[in-house]
Length: 599
Image 1: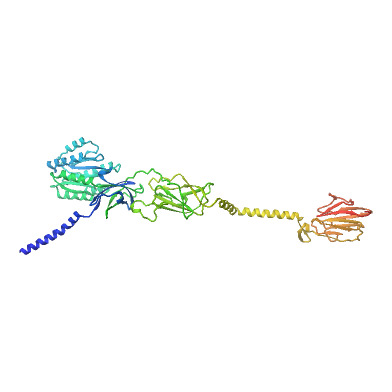
Image 2 (image 1 turned 60 degrees about the vertical axis):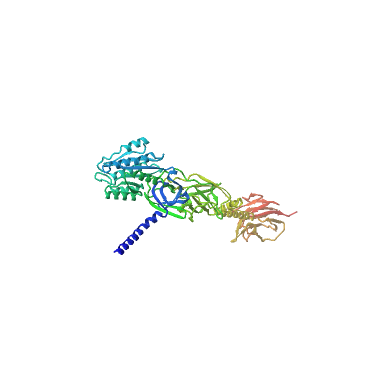
């Protein structure tokens, strides 16, 4: 019997030890981070969190993401050391289930809370009874707060707790014009809720709390309905808060502990890349490096508001020439959209000529700790991360000189899409002025090759015509084409050469030759071989002119030729006398008539 009792005691002790071990381990426990509340007014995000088992953290130790996107950490501080305040929404149960002793203790506990408010803190007091009445709005002075607390009574027949929570959430939402304070709901009740006549249900309250991110800290008097207490505990825990049991004797201490816990947390200020609200509910996670430990926690955050962005993006400094590439790099003051389009850039030289762009490569800088180390991060010449940059590569090496760049369709990534305006100038060291002039001439030749070709042909034609004129033009004699100065004359005599008359013939080449002729009756000259004297001259008729002798006189007659016969430059229209040294012109030939009798 004794052995059985001993065995049972050992088993019970072992089981108790096993059950107690996790509690002890947790108490001894590892450090942890606990997000209590997240408030957003994009691009600003504020997170209120508790850090247990670690201290001495700085902004560099804290990183966060919203919707999976990295946030930039701007500051981290303990709540009392920051500019943040606390808006306390106290829900005081004034139903008949709260006895006089509990009511007096409640009032006593609220006095140090009211007296200890900081300059940035506010106290909103809502009664929980037959209806939810706002007794303090948060704007009252200390004396007004004390009077309102003193007037609390416990005469209401019902407890509309969910309606009071709903009213507190509505007031918190309307008061959330900025992110300078965090909101805390403190419920002092016995846990009961008489839903008859109320407008809010438990599930609706849970949904509203989830969307708001505001925690409930419940101080629950013992003795109330067990089921109502369990419901209140569930609501408190799901909101991110807690519930503790209190009595008239310890409520002052318990409320002081709760306030100390609330003020003992941290506030971290983060900044998102833009003010665009993609979804109303987004996942928020935080990571804290505490010594050798990396602590994480996550929660759902309501993202509904955003501050308008009125700042347009700018170019930082002057565009810089790339090394090893024919191009430039441009740094932007913030991430932008549209910078990866070649048509977004118009680059001209001093003469207004555009540079042709081969490619553009846009890079966004690392944003927040989560983005650090990315292979596509934008960096400057020194390797330092920048907000955003673009590399523009040209199709060919530009010439040395100053250039101007204009931007088309580049905006920031805010919901306002602020336009990148203005122009930017930059210097470039490239091809020389000599190369520029040479390329300009070659470019004109390539562009106007047809004009050059036509001009060349025209010059050749003009030179050819000049040469042809110099050579006496082109002639066709007996089916052959040749130059006029190549015409040859032939002569034969149908009568014996007496030597008393001669013709000194000069052809188109300027070559002269004396031909002695004898004229008994007539002497014919023309192109045909039947003449006494014939020439291969297409300007001369087959029988062109005839010279006739009458005693000692000589006469010339034109034989109805096309081009005519001239005597001393005068056209021969009828039979005319020819004297010594007269000049006869026929076709391309010139004849000097000579009479040698008596000479």
